[in-house]
Image (cartoon, rainbow, N blue to C red; front, side, top):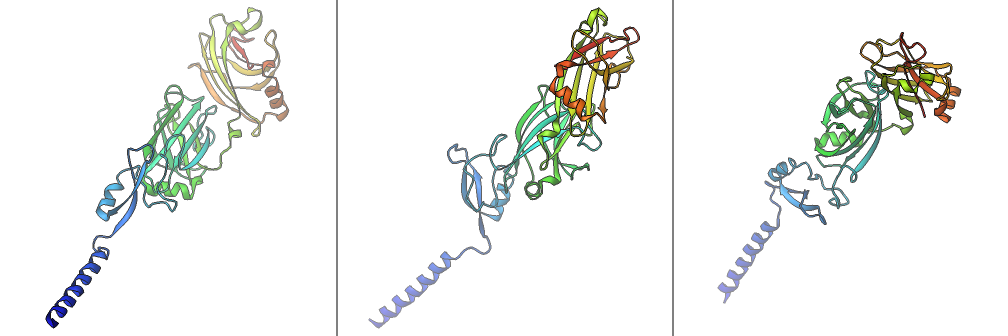
Length: 328
């Protein structure tokens, strides 16, 4: 009987020792939690525990999230229109370094999520050469040019682009910590260093100004004084706070180089005095730039009544105006 009691005690002790050993974590292969992207629409992420080797494999999946947020795994996907932290950016040419397209503007929306190796974006741009040649997130403060850290999809011929791309998790962390230290920009064939740009934090929709896109023609010059074959386009961008009128002009089927280009005060049936000097299209038929020092009172007058002003281009054959269009 005593032998049986002693044997039972030994077995109990050994069983307890083995049971405790099984309950201890494996110190040689510790595990940690990661939010794994699933195919479920209702539950897009599942929290799973993985070893260090498995974690390295998960981190190659851009959509997986590590570390797991304190609030738990995300309940929605990161997309070009929703999810994570959102940055709404106004893009302009003058914020490029060096300066970009004077009439180029646009908006960009950027979505990122801490711990996720993805960045989602949406572009809508205008006034630049399209399709664009490139688009990126760069690392640099305002006024400086920086290296590319996330390549994006460039806007196409219609001026828009949307999607999600892989992004290093340390870059995502850097953006979240200091969005003003990063910028998004769009490159074109004529502004290879960057046509329009905006920091991820600190831009304003007011910086885009007021834009007028008009079609020029010789028939618009009153009393049949214009070039009957002449056509063209003008984009006029008015920046009230800066006291500037920026422009991009193109002209076809007129005598080039032209000899003058202006904004005049006048209704469609008559001629009026010059109020803003522009740069005349050269031999290529194109010109662009910004006229600065424009009085706020004049800008207010144009903005209040654009139909009372017109833009035109003059040639030696048609010194009074070869092609023209009212601003409104």
